[in-house]
Amino acid sequence: MKSSEQDDGKEWTDREYVESSRNGCPDHFRLLVQRYQKPLFAYLSGRVGNSFEAEEVAQESFVRAFLSLQSLRKPESFYSWLLGIAGRVVKEQFRSAAHRERDRVAAEVFMADATEGAEEYALEEAIAVLPETYRQVIMLRYYEGLSCLEVATRLAMPLGTVTKTLSRAYLLLRQELKNRERAEETVNQITQP
Image 1 (cartoon, rainbow, N blue to C red):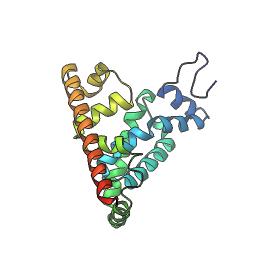
Image 2 (tube, helix red, strand yellow; image 1 turned 135 degrees about the horizontal axis):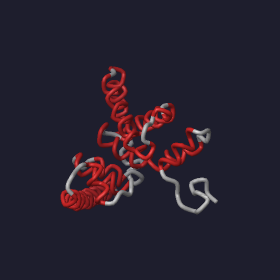
Image 3 (cartoon, one colour; image 1 turned 90 degrees about the horizontal axis):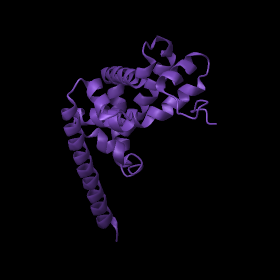
Image 4 (cartoon, rainbow, N blue to C red; image 1 turned 135 degrees about the vertical axis):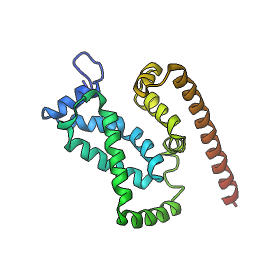
């Protein structure tokens, strides 16, 4: 039996992982990290603008979440709580002057190595360029696995608005991924002898 399953074979909920982590099994927090590292990265990519910074902020957010796990009042809302932590980390990083210098250097490195790892983060980067409303609905539906009704409840939106927003988000995602593919093909054609 995997450690991510209960005795009855069902996958654990966030609440169960959080409670288990609080009760002396920090390895279950690692499973929460695995569950949410991609959605958190996609969310942060849109906020900070590059993969390097998004990875750093994600790591810092997970560390702070682990250290503050005892203060989480609603363990079933772990991901929302984690997003709040990540938002605060982003704000802190943008306030520091050292961050601005590191951002400039990271941008130079990122531009030099733009083709490296592009395929690995294609979907996350496509999600990151979506407008905030679309990105938020995609994150909740796709990464958290919520139903449209649950997304509507979480965002306090009418169900019809959620489904329409989700449809538009999917359309924008498809367009973005096609545009990226065309751009990559063009670059490949130009660079081939």
